Image (cartoon, rainbow, N blue to C red):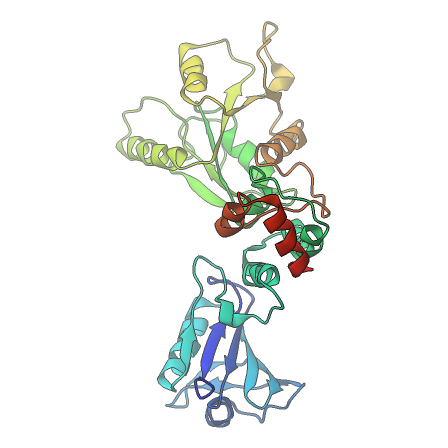
Length: 344
């Protein structure tokens, strides 16, 4: 279908500094001549204005002509800008090629084999340097002939950020601890119960592992209707979490509420915060932290990475990152080794 012109969003959806749209096909020269204010040149970055059919300026992108029928349009990454340009391309006869869940369509990449295709189509999911390095290292790692461990989900988690929920009783320092993990202040903190009135979720970089960190309101009985609804809603977020961090107050006497909270989340990471003023009889296992100073937070970060198999970023170790790859690992070893050699 050489006469088909396509537009492909090469960068992940959502707000960003830059969004790259590749356009390819016979309509490219006509489109640029009609809508770009300057003449595009092969192998050159040209800055100009991109306007719609009514001459309204949509953006001032940098256009790079790769050949006479292929160009990369580098836009400002606002969702409105991207959507407007894609709609203009659609109206001008371009087929919009969309991926799914942030993964590029196969037609968006040029690859020599299936493994490299999987690498290139999943590049937009690599949110950290470590994720990018491990993903790009996989063709070489697979080519060495070692069989990836089907139970090793580390690269999967690096490309699909797990949800980590922080729960605890009011005023134990959950939000201060969350701010330490974010490495900046994202949650309002104060020395009074109920300060966090709703769950707060955002991506945090845990030393190379991106996680969707969810800070929840303190779990308690309350007459405040807004706070009660917020606590109920946060419960749904916690149930969706891949890992729960239970924060307890090391300075307070043991209570039934704290015991019930710990028992409610078996397998959770237990953190004893305010350990600098811990009670004398505290002997329970768990990570001891002082959220206000950051003491012990490195241990918590390491434990979160360990829970998702990301305590080591050894680039020589082969790993799988798609469900199809994992299913193929169940095939006989001689078939897998033969395919790995073909990937080399």
